[in-house]
Length: 392
Image (cartoon, rainbow, N blue to C red; front, side, top):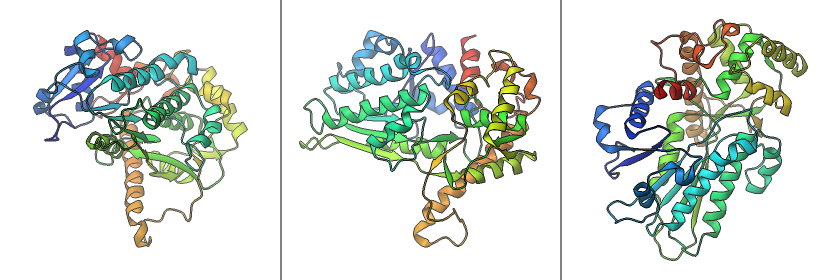
């Protein structure tokens, strides 16, 4: 966004006390991710606030701009909503105000604006094993954790508004992006150590095993660049205003790997003995590990996973054949490139985590601060540690 010549300014809503603190937080995270340039400062404006507060915690003048109560030179033309409280163990009710409420607030602001807006919602959580039809996702979501349920409800709200609207046909454009799990790129491999995927790998490394699953289960994983590209795509999507139906576009990012291939990569890169074990045995190992850890330990969310009975990764997906980078048919070449990029990205993330000491002496870690950045010379990202660091 900041490198686009067609975008005058990028406004970022940040949980911070002041605009200055918010900008510090953005720059710190961007530098960790290795994309920041001092030339971007003039194009970034930070609005401190809170997704769980009324009007997102914005000042009155900012709220007016968001709702289009301003001149055309100040108007907001695109909204990308990817903020949420990510707490895997929290129930739906605890996350609803922030995750669902913020979506409703932004849709309300969009509804009020007299200017055309492209609205992109970045979903997340469960990747359904269904055929992708909206109604068929409900059964999977009913068994999911509270976070996934809030993302699903928010997605439904966006789709409902886009398809029903408020009589302003062709006025706004809507885009839903479903990314699955997200990892750092193959070039830099900057992983988010708070993410469920790496916490799961860390736990399985600790107990020496992962839950055995049937073969052919698909794990939807994309690198952050692919997800960002899909999210930004909607900013240039506008309706002609010719009276056509409100537009809704859904992008399912299907890049990924087979679960058995994922664990093969993990075992190879970590050089450790991590074997597939029966679910019952794996659950026992995880429970034994949790009993030895402090109450605030980052592994605690696994208790919710155990209670739900969600012991594995991925979802069922009928594969015409296993992914084959070499000898693949011409029409599948583009998918093959995407798959190869994911394989390389996973490897790079694991290398960085290993160098950072993420997989070492896990049983001694009793706080969030102790784990993510063991080696300060290696770039890893943690939203929990970032929040603590910036609040000091």
